[in-house]
Image 1: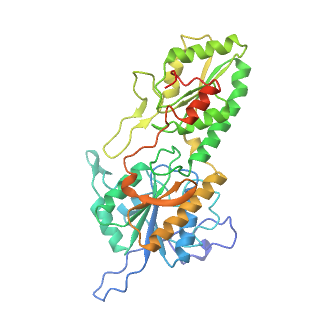
Image 2: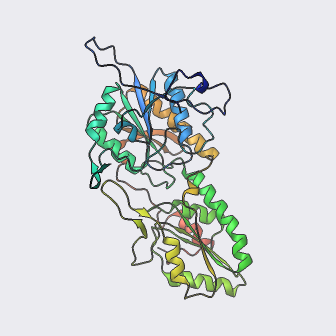
Image 3: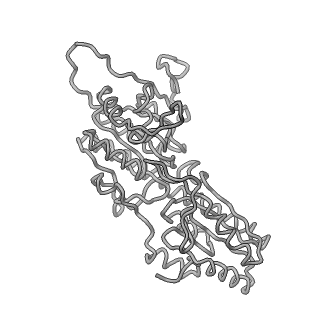
Length: 400
């Protein structure tokens, strides 16, 4: 990244692997001259946690928006670029060259930069302040017509808040958790499932070699989509998800039953949001105003509950952010590209307060209000859970 757009050493070449060029921009000068005709400008940001496919969205959005005559800005590190000065960049086709296969985001992400609850350091510590009016002013100072927010439920909630203050907002659904309402899938999910399935595949060999109970803890927060998909695809013996509180005795019985059938090891896939019946979700850090609690420890809690109830060695593997990194799958590259292109078209069409969405195989758009605060979770009586049970997978409780 360069602060000097005139530095020729930083200019991109035609090589697709050349690092993207992001040019820092300043607001238009404030003078007494008559304001020029409004420029069709869009600003895009990638908020919340990173997910494979973000760069595919940025690439498609910039390419399509440019072809439609839009000028594109990017806000660095999510909403942070709209809160702190000097963090807006100009995006063009050169900026997004060679990024389709890359993980992360060339703009950066932040799950702390909530403009309605922004952390500010003070002499006595850290305070959370409402910076949303400053964000509205900065958007106006750059003469931005529409803000495109790429993120999950929290990001859409912030976008809706800015929309309520008069900002045109277009949302693009992103989360590896696949828990966003009003869309059949979010990009990032497929890549996360691939990584989780790969891990379960590899754990089979070491678990069998040592006759162990191997627990793998997967992301997903309060939705069990990653764990359920990867657990079935990887051949897990036990799958524990947030939507179905588990009974520890059923897990113990499954381990015992496998032993009586000369199957000396057990693979357990557990979601970070899974919890025993009557117990709460394991948290690393409690929620702060405007932010979600950090989940973790579900695998170790399960291991502790099992250690005195079975004779096997128990090992816990926590995949964590491995599920967020790496090159996006072909599906996520395609879906991200479709979402980005459609978001640019919505900007050009003058749409406001909409989110692009995948419904029945087609990319469409829905009102932003239909998304905010509505989580998409696994149906405990749904087809995927029924398939898992029909294959002999223990889900932690009886049929629902």
